[in-house]
Amino acid sequence: MIRDIQEEILKLKKEKDICILAHCYQNPEILEVADFTGDSFALSVKAAETKNKTVIMCGVKFMAETVKILSPDKTVLLANGDAGCPMAEMMDKDLIEQVKKSYSDYTVVAYINTTSELKTICDICVTSSSAVTICNKIENDKILFIPDCNLGDWVSKQIPNKTFKLLSGGCPTHARMSAEDVKKAKAAHPNALFLVHPECKPEVVELADYVGSTTGIMNYAKESDAKEFIIGTENSIVTHLQMECPDKMFYPLSKDCVCHNMKATTLTDVLNCCKGIGGLEINLDEDTRTKAKHCIDEMIRLG
Ligand code: 13P
Ligand code: SF4
Image (cartoon, rainbow, N blue to C red; front, side, top):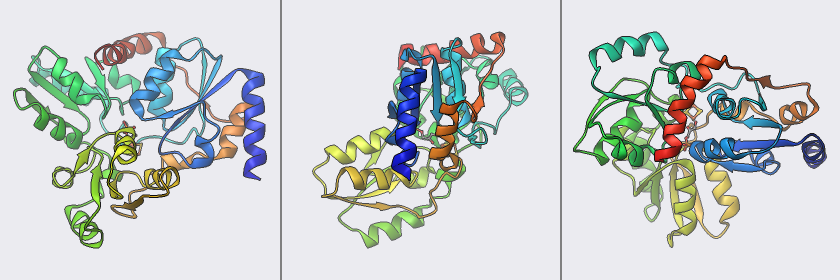
């Protein structure tokens, strides 16, 4: 059944000049039909490069908006129109406009997990894999980092010579994991290395052997000589790594680290998009798009 749907998707993709992009938190059967898979930064770069007429994003809404911002002439579909990122919706333009009044000499750095509307009043975007590099390269030594205070805290510790103002937003999925979870996992697997995403709380990140984006974690685990790993990010990464590295052992830091928004997309959603009967078509007004594009162009330039 899965194989039949996948074959239909592959056939339609070719016939209709469709490119499928999928974030690594998607299920394996979706990753298998994608033209490109990766973390948020890699997907943004790919979004700018793709030549196809239609792009289907298997991920959450801000990711599909990024594709539309960079490729306005393409038809861009979010495979499941209900898949949103709660962190991206957490802070709106009015709130940040108010905050900016008190921090007018700060450069506003927005995590890519923000709406296109909010990006219009920010100076530059970052992803978890590019945040340290980009914040280092920004000339200003005062940075207002929104919305993820956990990622912001980790970045600020890597760049102690700059001043960071953080607000209290973040990813509800990664924030679920605690230092107590780390203690238990390390006790159960004393030889395992602990790899963590910087969206986790500072007290969790402090205990890690490696901190990085989803792709960073996957590359580190694949290249490492170690044989066992505790994975502190969305649990699909545990599954993918276990499939790719059958001679190594991967343990989830917590069984609760599941992003139901990322998991909302099904293979049938992707098929319906290919058939032209599903998905959410992303449309942005030109003023919003060009202002938000500035932030993303800057990210790609400095990242
Ligand atoms: P990365 O893909 O940059 O690692 O971000 C993880 C995430 O939570 C995406 O929503
Ligand atoms: Fe948003 Fe967190 Fe889910 Fe990523 S894992 S989409 S940041 S809620």
